[in-house]
Length: 93
Image (cartoon, rainbow, N blue to C red; front, side, top):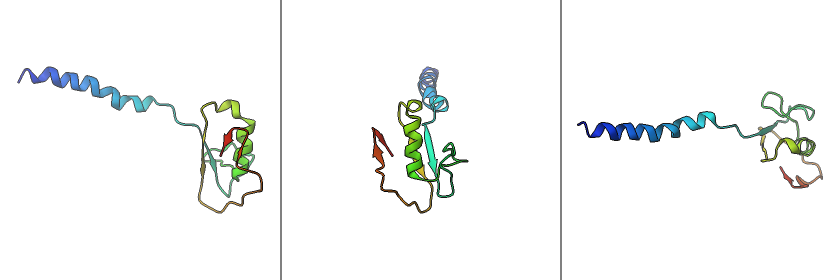
């Protein structure tokens, strides 16, 4: 029985970081868009942007703040897309 104790300790030592590391992970940058939002809002979950085009404009104006990219979440609803393309200048929405 004593031979199994060191292997259990080693197992805990190796597995503990696997469970602890996600707690320290940085959240991915995200913008939120909702039909009832406002394109002058910051694009948070509580204060979403109103249109996909508003998200594109926000990202164009703040591209330096998102060097690794950003995920844009479209909340449920109906969106009317303008004639403007949703991919422009290296920013893909």
